[in-house]
Image (cartoon, one colour):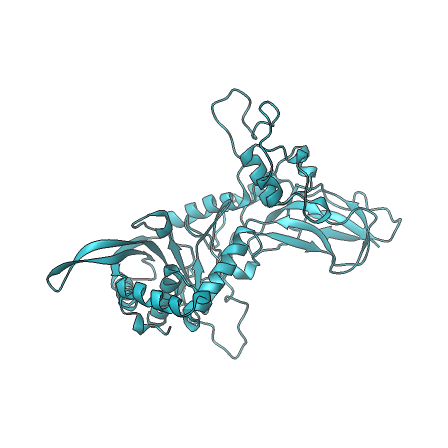
Length: 444
């Protein structure tokens, strides 16, 4: 008897996915656990694996198709067996999935900011805690809130969808005006990858297809929304309106921290870490002293987390994502630096597992590397706060009655007033500033 292959929920908030590329052809033998296809969610490219053994007797969708979760994409059966005909419902279309996502709901929504897109799960980070442990403290009656699945973007419907290419390569080709069908792939099985597009020349004038939605001669270009960009837009609306947010800004003297960092790196060049890593470590230590900031708003209660998992905003090709440094208060600066570099690299390649970007208890967004002095970040619900970090800049300041030049940095804390009162947020920021200005307060 044939077994239906369905589009699985490969991330906590996935409602639909784009089947990037089939890895098995009709007639190929299939074992349990074999990779059948690659699927792109709003955050990563995941593998759809076989749940039954046999032969792939039918593929119901083509490469590049957008398919709703739980809809059929193919059949596994015995060699020579015919795929069931009318028994399989057609895969839900993207329009149907988007319409469902737009329906009103009374549930609470883990949200994401412009600077950070980490999604929050109502389950404890890293999976459920054993019954003998208390992973969090509830401050009100019991009850659970569930996230609203996010809608996915439009998919290219032209012939280029049949070309074997990674999602990153397709986007690069579109940006450079390269005809992807004319590029020779150097990846597995001739697949076109990022390096192939980097070495390709733009398609000669008149030969490239016009960008989607932009007829020749028009003065604009319509760019289809990626899954990540749609998630950003939807979550911003859900965050800015409902959350009563206020902002606290403080300026930090980073001179001592900079000197300590220089000394430590000089002792071990392989153990390099950035100023952002210093902020992560200091924020984790400060959160240990201020439980109300390391918390979630759960509609009918406030959840104070005993563990400290810090989301770090990382810019990627389609937007932003927040990989998580778990148990940040227990890690050294060098360990945090190495982990952030690894997570950021895999985030840009869309190779993070859902557990690596969901479940943060606090988020940090740093735009200092872009020359930004200060900014306000959008809270990532259900988290109660997010820290915006500006650049470090030499400034003349008065110390002990004398004007001296010191390296200074501005921090802005966005707070959900339903959880964090003004004095509570100010106390946390004061503790954080004190730790950054006196690095011996941290365990290096």
